[in-house]
Image (cartoon, rainbow, N blue to C red; front, side, top):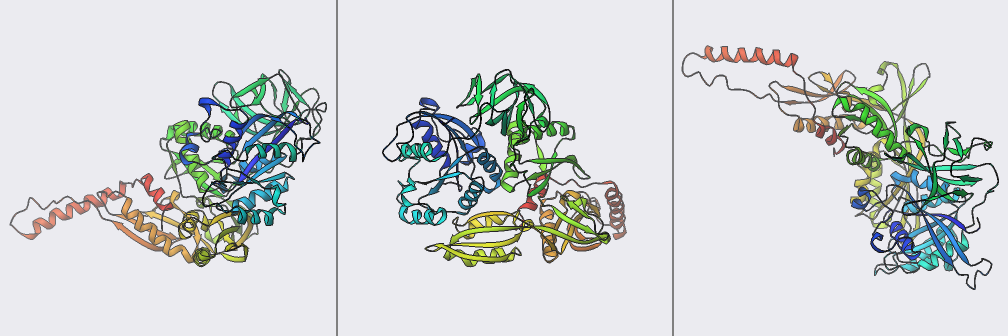
Length: 604
């Protein structure tokens, strides 16, 4: 065990985590030749196309360590390094928290040209909560725009470490890789655990393989797992045979036994996706451990949206696809729901808009599912007049207005790090979104951190895009949940010819309702195809109509055949057409195209 090191790489978006992981794998000879490519651990096409990491990836390296003058206490030899590369975007922070739970140390990577950013700070705090040993690494030191001395000052202020502890590196040129590997062996403690104790393994990830069933990834905390052992999952109490166990190289490498401190995989022919839960404990059936491993937090979705199949008969296929996705992405939650406009589907919980977009894209690519997604919204607490509270994720599930005493909406504490010349526009943006300034403090030079309390519902749709554009891409943004607050919210309904379209209902603040309703009506007028009869588009709060637009009917010129003669001949034909249109309107229904649902997200 003293020759094992488990570590992850944490950083802000685009600070070079995956590139450093690539260089470490090349330096240790784990990947070589044709296999060596950029983002070698990012195995999804989507990750390579967008240049972001969506999933955390585990891989094992072997490093031949030679002790130096400043650490003679460690013995030379081969060390097993288990690396978990993590995503940087705030929407995938749950992946980071799971990776941190399986490690004893972390490389904190900071871009030498950009310095400490919002996500750097939040990931660091997450790692410190789990008592991880932090190794600060300053990446991109080879760039002309690098400011190593200035960024070193920022890291020293943040961590309270000595300047000589910070490793200068470059993922592009491979500079500093030996120093990083030596620091991992020297500074990160070996995992604690007893190989002879009852078996305890923490599941931190799982994937679905169509040929072999569900493959669970775990870290052995105590005990030893051997091939062919009869094991059980602690929470579900289901029993399985360990058909194949092994460690995670670039491919899966089978082993006969895996003991305490190591990271590996298990294949036991599990077919039902609900039987494997991330954070569960694997133990032996004959000599089980007394309690499950603690400290694994449940994920709390921030954004909710309805996901419906375009063809009604694809409902069961969509359920199976979502279950398989949930195995691979434990932060996705879903419950069945139905809508008058869209039929049967699921109300899904996501960690943010990028997460929602990625899930939609993965459903299309990996499972060939065409889906319609409704307007995203957040969860609200609705108090009725009897004092009872109900959590509502969907505006259609709101009780009648007369029964509601008050509504509370979720707030977040947002941390925005930017340069001083963008403070004004960012303040204006946050105040427009009903934000409250908590504090503002200077980090170093002209960089400032602004803390705001904001309603989550206001930032869900376009806040991040606007923040990036007004700060020319310089502002970095991070947030965490900060409780619920009472708010004056109203349910805004959209009616087409008097019929309510439940999929377009939204909850919004009373001050925004009229403006938002008017914009929605105007947008729908552009997008709805014209029919043989007039379509009235109305926005309503309860029984009160606050905005209206009309899509004019397509008319056939029935008077074309009249030439000369009395006006009454023309009038007779027009009256006949009018009666036909009226009858058509009674039985005609209006189809809302998919782009209308998407356009509501982009209202600006």
